Image (tube, rainbow, N blue to C red; front, side, top):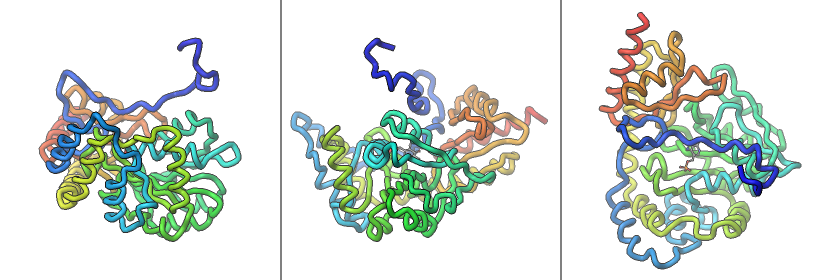
Length: 354
Ligand code: PMP
């Protein structure tokens, strides 16, 4: 640590992304990426856009915003495109939370929320999930705090209904409810329609999962015109050119190739159902996932042991250390071949304990 660090940032515990290994080639099921490449149209558009990299990109991302707004059926002014959905989430913490209005989120959810709260120096509170890992929307009614709900939730994979989100939004009219829909294309009901009915809901989505563009960093927020205007003020105070021109062009092309995305989502969902069934046959307890990953534990083998043995076998999954989830592993859904390799390795691991 240097002598120059702001004192209040001294204890900052940063987010630790899943490993991106170099060297040995692993079957990578640890960061919920798509196993499929981006749409060829997106790749071509990015490479064409690269020829104009001497110029700044459009700070309003007008064409991309319009294409996205059309796809979602909302006005352009209700959409803000960002560098991954992490950026819009960070903007939301910065814009809508303060000492009189803490952030609140589930005790088991996306680990970045508490880091965003800490780096923005805003207080936060957590609400425990139920013992079966479901989120009870009643815990969030009338709490008068800025609420962050990943729906479907990560790493549990479980979703709540749009009606339940609506109850939360209605009962907290003085506060913003942020619904993080990073995994919405794999199940669950989007709350985007609620953004046209209430002015205190912000929905965030991403191109990282269903659209195979994690490395391009493209996400968005959808909300009322006023909410988006506030977030734009913050964006233009931090990083006006936040979506680079290659990513912007790739995003538009990906939106024009929607059938490619839909087909990949269908395959992932099929592979998820197959993997869930086979894991249960091997004795694993597996949540009913609405995402592109499953969350699973074995009653007789520790979560860490499963993780380490899979790693030895050349397969990376995500293991978390907090006490309440340490027996689980989060396993991203890949191709059928990747899932068969995972299941073969787990068959060996589970045989060893017999
Ligand atoms: N929300 C959730 C729940 C996530 O799991 C992730 C992925 N790590 C994100 C948001 C952020 O994804 P990205 O910044 O790639 O859009």
